[in-house]
Picture 1 (cartoon, helix red, strand yellow):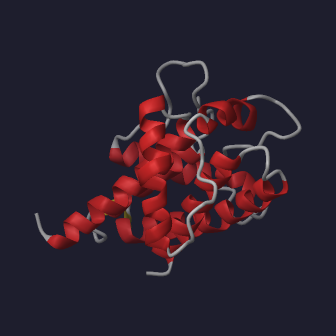
Picture 2: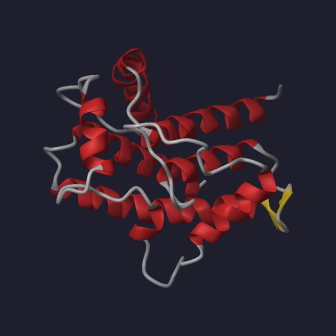
Length: 198
């Protein structure tokens, strides 16, 4: 495996971390690795200062349901198109569905699991980051549904950069309530932004 493929795989692995975080809270052992190792490494990679105090591993489990699943005044939508300008990317769910059909990667789940994401539209953050991970790992000139992978990647990265910035703005207003997912959204936005300008 060459160095470029290794780099692409490493980027895909980071994007999959974000996909899994937006799918639901990680199990306790994985949460411990995330808060003690993985997220601090991503902060280092992005040139961001470390959090003081660091996150507690229980925060992801405590925050996911009230933030993404329960209909409360402090909840946020996990669908990216809700953070984009009306009319600019109304076809985002169609684009994700097209990617899903062309790649054979499903965006829908076969069954409901309590406390986890159950996307009803394909632009759920879990799905979007999953497709970004796929797109960074394939040859940019590969054709997917009549469009090369590099163009798909550019379009999705642009939408993620804009949408995640707006989600972060919203989470900032309720910052004290959801520090773990505030951190996840911030790092996902910064990481997507860094990829978007490469």
